[in-house]
Figure 1 (cartoon, rainbow, N blue to C red):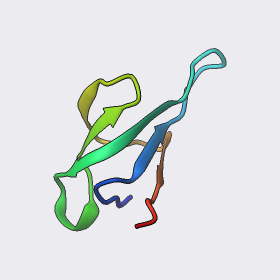
Figure 2: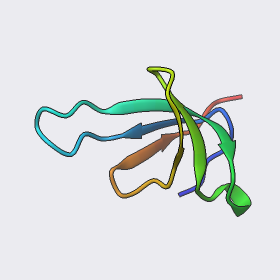
Figure 3: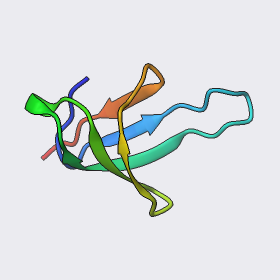
Figure 4: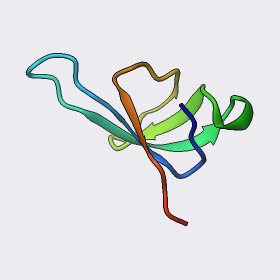
Length: 62
């Protein structure tokens, strides 16, 4: 998985009633776009993310 600053990330809910979590990649800390990513989620929470198989990156169009 590779991302750049400004890309959107979606972490899919793993249970039937779990909502997907959306956020923006604000910093890429791995080499060549690799994780970990500093992500600001839509609710304003920021955290360091090591995405798993439940994550999808939507690349920004600049």
